[in-house]
Length: 320
Image (cartoon, rainbow, N blue to C red; front, side, top):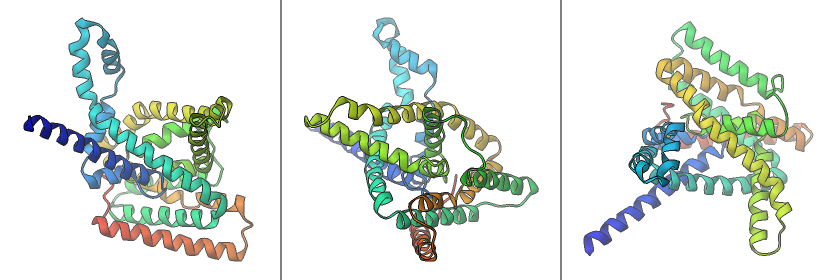
């Protein structure tokens, strides 16, 4: 009796621990400049995360779906173990919980205090680029070229010289694929990608509206129509993220395995070139007067100090 109770307690504590990992990872990824992948490294579950994510293949998914057939149940059980769902499910719930909470805060602050919010983000992004570049070496022309290419590409997107093809649902789908792929990469934040693409506030507001409309519907005060509009945006983003996990993330992991330093420098270059991106949100909300620019700079310093303090507490960030 006691051994069974102890096993059950350990199992529940393990689920709770993984859920808390997800909370930490989701909070980090919801803030530009702080990477969920880096949090996974610091907390010691990055290798398990990558193994679980890359285990998702069409073959294994089909094996799981075929579990209804008694003759294929052994293969279905083996596929489930390889997918490590007992880890991914509580982790994913924790990530979603944190992202939902942060999205609500971002939506409110973007409306009431855009200068403070996006000025702080400028500092987070700039400081994270400094911290990550510090851990890498620009010891060859190839590495310098990789860092320069990432920075130049990011700057072109941040200044709207380059834009994603299509519009509406196409952009949301592509944003989901790129952002969710970035979530599992150490050093790169999914929310940073969304800021770079100009979708961060819109998607935060859509998620907040979707959750609010679901709550209202459950309480009897809402309508299905109110759920559908933001819900469609969230669904398209999630679909893009699912595709990104099995495509873009695999390509980047392959590049990291074959050409680690140049790939990391390219990724950190993307961060460095993204520094001006939050300024667009400030410019949309406020005229860029001397006072607004001074406040932006002050909040950017605060963001940089916060990131450097986090780096010091963590003992230094390593992008891989």
